[in-house]
Image (cartoon, rainbow, N blue to C red):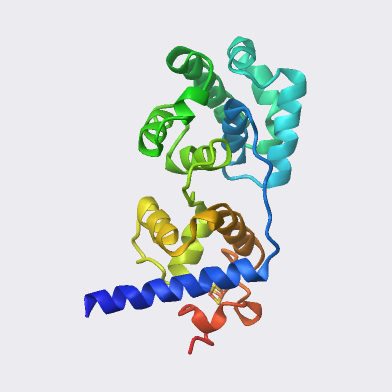
Length: 226
Ligand code: SF4
């Protein structure tokens, strides 16, 4: 009985993800060859939109440079001023300086050897860095190291819970694993990127657009669930 329930819920998850992949064009985000730059970008992207993150990163690049050495040597006020468009700039500037220091001290200034380690080891090492939790570590491991993982951001949390792909109390790793089991390896990156897009455009935090949603017949949250 339990095995059948699990099988049915896996089939449903697979159908949802196939629809998602069919609905949007396949999209790829260019991978950075420099993991430190990717890490800075990911930290700047926390709780802000893509545009503000990109502007803040470009300003940081022109004013200071995005390497562990330039950030360690820059005054914290200058870093804060450069990344102002990303918001929470006082707190983030301190985090960026601490991350830069830790990368120099514990990784010899280069994260590539750490990222080349097997996933659990690399993730554990990244999560020792200030400001790096499971999501930031997984984003870096997926985009900068090509590891097979589906990072879970706040949109993905919300969507998977509304769709009841996981329980209401599921943890970060429970959501990640549920998605990974239902997704073919070659689609991990697309599922991550497209679920975020779906969360911004359709399954929004406030006022989800259920009547227009292409998943409404599969979603217990919607009135049109059959
Ligand atoms: S039907 Fe509504 S709640 Fe369900 S996935 Fe679509 S937008 Fe989200």
